[in-house]
Length: 278
Image (cartoon, rainbow, N blue to C red):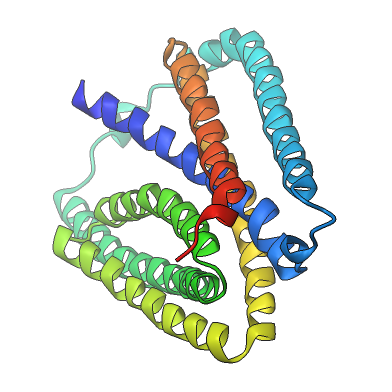
């Protein structure tokens, strides 16, 4: 029961993170890079047009999921028949010599350890770059406007919680201990503070440079949900649909609610940011 609840919670957090990230990229960072927030004639027009663009992404994602689910349900009887048709191995091939079996286990253990180390380096490198850009975004945002900094920080927090949980799960599954997994995450997190210092420095001394930071961060904030988080959500629903229980409907509803809440929080803060004065 607890495990099922955790899986549902993680899917909800992933969806909320995806919603907050893509909304921040479209409605906050890219407009900030073009100074659209400073043009009084536009008002909030660019915000609602950006919201319409984001809503269209959600509608098409949901429509694709509905069509894919209907197609998979039609193909499910065929898939079950294919799974039920299995070929038994001959008796003389079912047993391995003891020496070969031992060698196989030793080789497997060695490769498992090597795979865990290489995976740890890959995750740490990718996370370090990601967190460096996140830190740059937060630092530059707070140096420009407190409300903007709150908005971007919230979006990053919503994305990082499920992201970090998933990273730790992957590292543990690859054979690393809990201490090593946490150490890898902490090392990559240090780059976020480096980015924060650079972002604040640029924001206070080179205002024009921060526009480029917002442009790069906006691209990252849109890329990560569309290329990584949305496909992960879709693959998870595919597995649940093939399993054939009601869990797919529950998770699909959690995805929808999470996306809307993530976007709603960012849009609310964006509209109220002009009233936040420090």
